[in-house]
Structures are given as structure tokens and as C-alpha cells.
Length: 95
Image 1 (cartoon, rainbow, N blue to C red):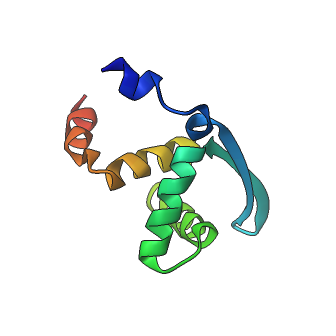
Image 2 (cartoon, rainbow, N blue to C red):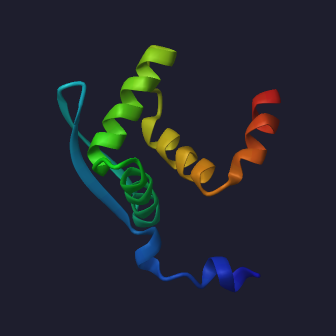
């Protein structure tokens, strides 16, 4: 089992920083390459660029919660939801 996890190529979990504008402010987001690939696929499915998808998600978070605490973690969790991990969300929310 550990070979599946430990044996992955280091490029997959190398961090990559991308620059973008959120709410008119220039910023950067640092995520592991694997998460960027997932976000790229989600954005393509939505018919927008990855930056546009992230900006829209950020705006929606601000609208719903008034702030975007730990936005990079939110992006990682969005990726797990996209990958089908929604079954763990209700259990976490109940804690």
C-alpha cells in the first residue's frame, strides 16, 4: 500500500506558485503541482481559465462567509470534493 503513496514522483508534490489577482489585488497562491492539475481540469470543465475559476470561487467565499480564511486549504478541499470525497464532508461538519 505505501508504494502507491510513497512511490509517487516528487514532481507531483512539488509546490508551484502562481500569480493572480483576487478582488483587484495582485497575490500569489502556492499549491502542490497535483492540486494545480486538478484545478486546471475543474476550470476547463467550467469553460474558464484557472485564474478566472479561482477568482470566482474566492468571490463566492467572500459573499458566503465574509472572508476567505486559509484560501489555499479551501482550494485543496475543493479538489478533494471534485475527486469524490464528498462522503467525508458531513462527518467533518458534525464534529
